[in-house]
Image (spheres, rainbow, N blue to C red):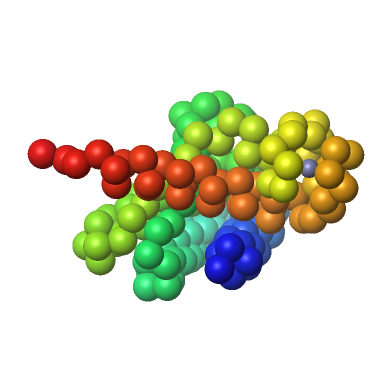
Length: 190
Ligand SMILES: [Zn+2]
């Protein structure tokens, strides 16, 4: 059962990583359109054209993000009874000035919002988990293993576990989410 759950967590991670690639591509188109605009003289038809192009890129990003987050949130709610997300502090994340990061933050924020109301309507549980140490912690032995962002594999020197870094984090997030569900289910709510 746990194995199947982790496979599901992995599935979502893969989907999310695919969207990351898409936003990085769009970032290039955005930079190109901005460059052209800055070169065009004010008040000229050329500048008008550049502005139109820039608006179209923004629109495309917005439409794709909307489409992606709607579909992913629906698929999560249709397929899973309990959905666990990391409770990432969006405000803090947006302090990063990297544009691709901004676009991704907005997509993540939308995904959480959409999943939250769809889960409520469908009677599913959405759990937000404290993200502290979810990447560092070994999902097998619980020890903290330091790693930087470029390391894609979690290699535990304590128990020897070697798995994809996102999968390791997903298992931790799932465990924390299930713990929190068990806790709240024990307390009757009046
Ligand atoms: Zn370990």
